[in-house]
Length: 79
Image (cartoon, rainbow, N blue to C red):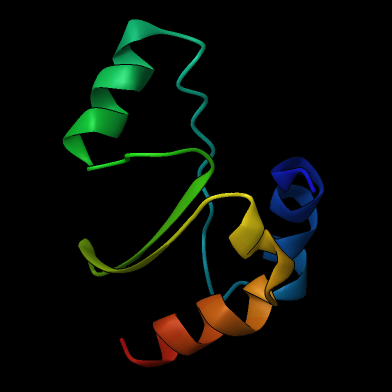
């Protein structure tokens, strides 16, 4: 399962409850540096922030089989 289809549809499904940013660590040294600063240890990684503070993360392809919309929604409800 690839993340791209989810990345394109999930923001629409969530109805503005969350904003999404895509970062490809293979594109540039700056992208890799940013990922390292944010503690990304594997790809794909989804990090969830609330008011600038990380409140959760989902790492790896096998975790994409879970319902991302509900998982992210639960994380941002705790915000």
